[in-house]
Length: 361
Image (cartoon, rainbow, N blue to C red; front, side, top):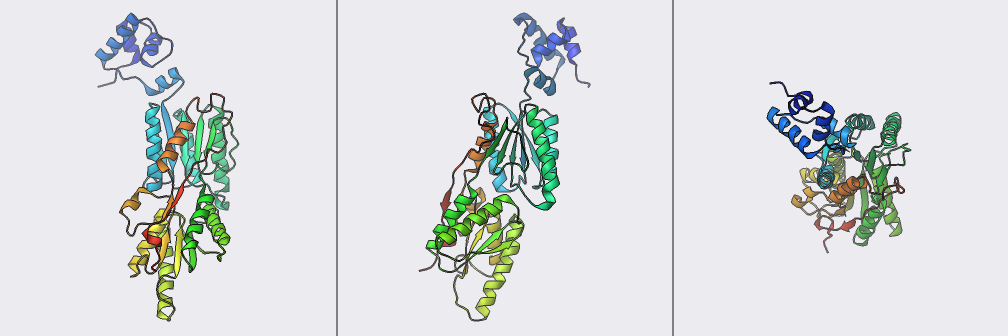
């Protein structure tokens, strides 16, 4: 059965379509109560469903928030998404989700799609990249965001600013102290470990990974230790697993040639899912943590509750990051004039040492 139209509702109520629209689509200009009641009764009798786009036009708000993440299956992004959803619920808004695999070209398409649907705001969570292959796509993403902000949209980016984005009004960055926290992790690990360190990092040019690697190396230097070796891999569990196989072969090879037994490597994976992958590879090769190697991650994702041995990591308030990003884009979040738009809004984290980095006495 065809849906009833606003014109049919107006005809049954004995009013103009414009008046019916003002009643049903949420306009601030409301007719008298008797007319409004008559329109609603007509709509109910006809089974009329208001048009969301028309409501958005009438209210100057669509009630939609766009969320762009790399991979919603990744517990890091899932936790941020929960925070975004919580804050959206507070604002009585709905969340539209796009997953992009970290490709700026896909992010640009998502921004354009959200803008076309008149999303009130957009939250982008995921590491920025300065890699040469991303240069043109970064520029197009920045241009799309600038256009969206100039047309009244509001944006919050978790981590680093979008490369090349110049919009100030309505543009916020939720800064994560990756370098500082990785430095603190290295300092604490170095205090209890006298062997070598290895870092499993993401591709060079990935800002989040590079920040954490740089901070970890600075922490080792401050502790008077030699720099860690760096293994580059994919910024996901599969990348961690691949690097773990390489390290497992090295540990077993050293044992075969008569080198000292016991833990010889302290491994820092720049995110928890990479650490989980590396640990799985070590186990697959018959090695045990922390007996044969110690390992730490970064993020403190929810999945770690079931990981054994308990993984040392850096705890980030992931859900709070999502809430903060969403609230930063709410109307009036800056006092109404956006005077601080574009300035970083800092969050905090903490080093959490667990069983995976314990060293036998």
